[in-house]
Length: 284
Image 1: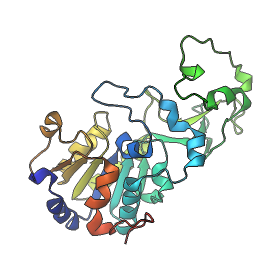
Image 2 (image 1 turned 60 degrees about the vertical axis):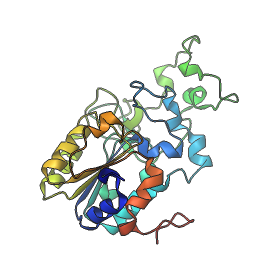
Image 3 (image 1 turned 90 degrees about the vertical axis):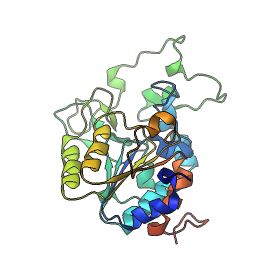
Image 4 (image 1 turned 30 degrees about the vertical axis):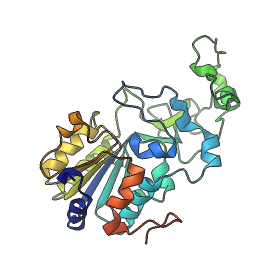
């Protein structure tokens, strides 16, 4: 087995690591049935991103977090010097019990609702109302035939115009529309949060960085790997494509790359710290 994917060697590095940084992407949630956005085939690997916000999945399967989510939550419990950055908006990490103080949601959450008025700071957390208002009911209906295309995604179908008065308005300012609490393409991330992450990295040597389920091609995510290296970290990439020839060219001496699904390998990799995962999903 090559040194870059030798589990025993990684365990040695983990045991000697105090300050650990993790960067998580869509691949972390892939085993939970959620599609990844970016892949080798193009920008969008699965066009139906609406499955990320399906309330029926949220209600029918409260155990949606997979073993990788639980492993990271367990690491947060065991190590107060662990900081996890997630690009995911699915809220599966909090649902796995990941401590809020060690988790930074870089792109927000689909289950947060905020005011679209930039001058209003209204935010509502953990909103699972579906639909958010009666006018949006057709967009939230589950299709009886999964092979069919949702009306909102079918360019052949004319959409009914929804009047602005029928959409949910902010209960605080009364004028702004309510919107998902996520960072849309073209929007800026929370600078206060980013400054806090930079401050954490600058506090001292970073011993280990876990890059899980992400190609880390988008900034500022891509920059965190460079910053961690400069802070002395060994980087461990866990991604189904991590051991591809192109990706291996980026692996520095002493770093790790595991080309496996995070849900299958992460609990094993973190075992020296979090213990073994039992059939009940707990670590002993």
